Every structure is written in structure tokens, then in C-alpha cells.
Amino acid sequence: MLELAILGFLYDTPLHGYELRKRIAALTGHVKPVAESTLYPAIKRLEKADLLARTTEPGSVAAPRHVLTLTEQGRRELRRRLAEPDPRDISDENRWFTLLAFLRHLDDTAAQSAVLRRRLAFLEEPASFFYDGDRPLRAEELDDPFRRGILTIARATSRAELTWLRETIASLDD
Image 1: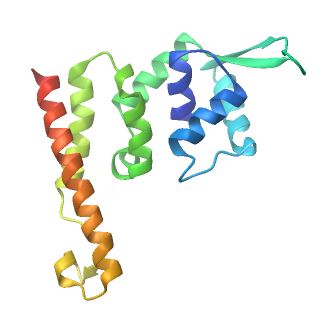
Image 2: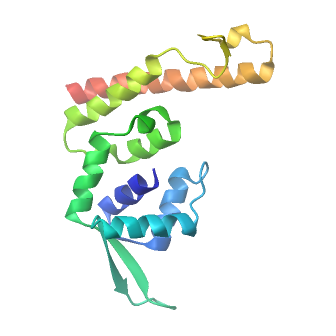
């Protein structure tokens, strides 16, 4: 998820590490804070794989600043990861939002639609946070108001996403 966010933000424009960290935190930080000890090793891995390049600019007040730019190979890798997402990128809501934030970088609307169809299929499968054996429980079956609340909120969120997915797929397919 972190590497996808790095590639995605750099696809639009070169960024300083600090600005990149702020943008990633705005997208995912409410769930997973982005520590420098996590971000900079990921940047180094991507740089070593020739997916991004680092240049140095003079700092306005302090030390020189490193500017990160996506290479052409990095642009291709982002589009590949978007077109062929890991199953966890489809099923995990936070990873899905990261993928969705950059899906516009896929130039092919059929490929965009295919990714959305995978999410749609996932959401259409019966699921719950709570089960009676193998049977998913519905909110109406629970006496616990807090667990019922979880399922009620999840149902409303899923319905909204399903509506958006169907509408967006239809518009992409036109």
C-alpha cells in the first residue's frame, strides 16, 4: 500500500520527501501513520529498483532537499499494479482506497472497469463481522447494540459503494 501511494503521488508531480509524507498521511494516516522509518526505506527500495529518481535542490533555509521523481519504469510499474491489483488491494478497504485514489492513471477504461468489477464481486459476496457457525449474521439478529451498529454502518457504506461502483462501471463501459 505504501509503495503504491508513493508511485501514485509521484506520477502527478515530483515531490520532496516531506511533502510526499504529508500527502500519504492525508490519504492513509488516519489508519496507518506514516513514520519516516517506514517511508524512507520504501523510497530507497523503489529508487534501487529504478522506479524513482532522487535529485538534490538547495534548501530555502536549511540543508539541501531531495526531490523524488517517477521514472518511466516507475510509471509503467504503477499502471501494472493498478491493472493487476493484489487480492488484498480489492478486499481491504484501506488498501482499496489507496488503489482507487490513483486508478485514473490507468489510461484504458476497460482496465479501470475490470478493477471495479473485482471490487463489486467482492462486495456482492455474503459477509459479516459476526457469524453463527458458517452463516453470516445480520444486524437484525443481534441483541448487542454496538455490534448491531457495526453491521448497520457497514451495510450503509456497502450499499453506497455498490451504487457508486455500478454507476461508474456503466459510465466506463459506455
